[in-house]
Length: 325
Image 1: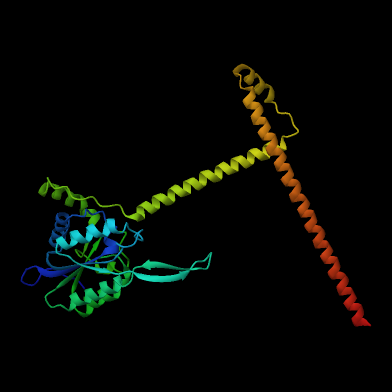
Image 2 (image 1 turned 90 degrees about the vertical axis):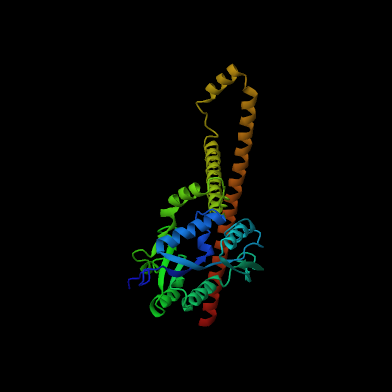
């Protein structure tokens, strides 16, 4: 079905904007009331509608220390404050406590998780669709779980639907059939134009910067830990190769000894080289003792295995003889 955002008289339709908080927080948007108003006006101009109702739905991460994906209080509190100043109704859902057992220690642990945000988004969408004053529904989301509710509003309730995405890759493939012709507005495509027009309209105002989400910080931390582990493994491998080479070349005289002696005589660092040689000798002695211990342990294990096999064979032979008698 082709949908038009203008009425038969040529007037603008009334619309309701629903924002998914988990999806909106990943957008590169400044948390400022004037900036939000500027974005909402650009959206209304693109879809040729009047925004009558606006809703923001998210989970309450303000009381959690880590924020579980965001920086908790430092992100959600200013965002909700600026949203309410721009006449957006914020529906912040409480977290639920979930108990589970650890895989390693098998002890019960508790964690806080979001609950009811998607259901609240779908119910609010149906409420706006039932409202006779609202003609179009604008959805700032990218989750494909809302397909059934969106399809019901579009097919059964005859509501025109517009989609708002952060970028072209962040929207689900199940929602893309609703984004035909002018029914899709991508933020990244209009972000530069919005920033330029905002700077012209409000040159003196300095909006708050977007606090970086903890997803990017977690990614940076993961990359740092990976590089650290790689460097550690490489260092350990280099040490092991050095020890192996020293053990193999213990009885052999290296050709670099006279060069080292000459270098020590010229530079006067003979005492340092003697200390290094002594430390290398100690390491070789320790490695040889460890190798001897491992060899002896293997021999003892083989002897025990052979003894147990012979005992089992003798038992079987005795049992067969008794059965024959």
